[in-house]
Length: 115
Length: 110
Image (cartoon, rainbow over all chains, first blue to last red; front, side):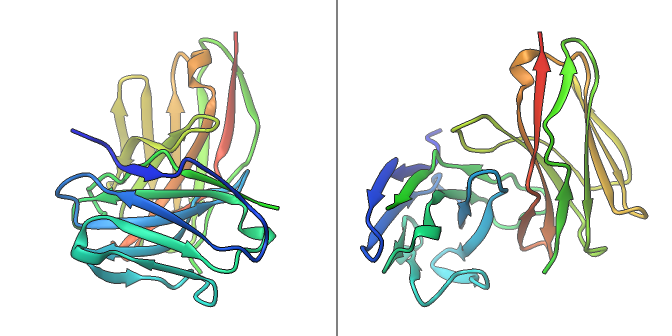
């Protein structure tokens, strides 16, 4: 079974530029999550999709971050414009529907550096 | 905002000892709890989950849950240098998603 795929693995941009990350979840996983993990901290949920609908985006900085999951499969997270504090690893995860007993599987992450 | 707290460490234990990692959570409504291991530069991977009060054992790992005290722990028996990593505790948020703690860095000394 293929795991969660993410690209790019690394990205370096200057502040005020824009950047996009791509995620392809495990086949059959209806739920997709985007997390931001700043060095030394735990992952923080940015947005959660179930199929192509948004379940939770309460911690997404909507003035600069956007995400979509067209067709309920792969997803794109965009930052525009980027700030220095956006430097972090962006993790994508997927799971079957529901979290109580269902494991989240994480992708390798995209390490973003904003200069 | 729901919170999950962990001692950031580092927690250092000698090889072969028992490592004890602790986690507290703020929301009494949380029902399930997950322990993830994250090696430096890698993504988190699930070790175990627990949802009933008491102990749950899986190999060298034992998860303990005390809902009255809002406390979760992970014991690692016969610690190995390969167990050196950051351990993340997560609690479910209304059964919808997870809130992660900051993680505890464990170092197992040969």
